[in-house]
Length: 138
Figure 1 (cartoon, one colour):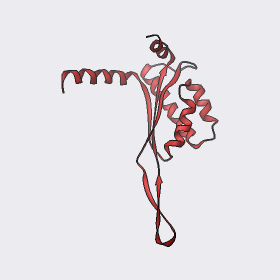
Figure 2 (cartoon, helix red, strand yellow; figure 1 turned 90 degrees about the horizontal axis):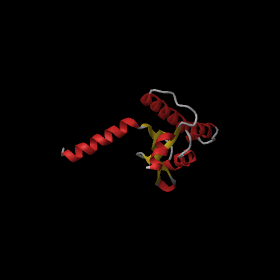
Figure 3 (cartoon, one colour; figure 1 turned 135 degrees about the vertical axis):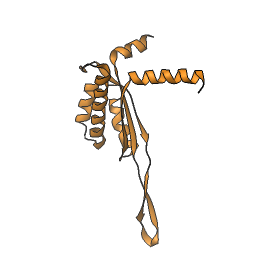
């Protein structure tokens, strides 16, 4: 590995050590349905987002609520203090496609229709509001 690559890799590692995130992989629902729920909480304060997810009637909201709680716990572990109301916000949340399960459904006249059972990966990154203000000023 060259010197420049090593320096940039070290910077990325330092940045990753500071960020608190949580990932949920291979969720058996379509990415489109999960993105609807993720869009509801993107950029919101964490405890407000948890309230939105708790009272949402979407099935994906329960999984996302658990994931946000995990990201908050990761932030608390890295910063060695408890999260208070108004201190954290969801800085980044994104949903990616995961591998599809391809199945066959029987159809008339000896044919078969393909069924694609979609799944997704979700990543949530939590940050403090102080850091958000520092980034906006710089």
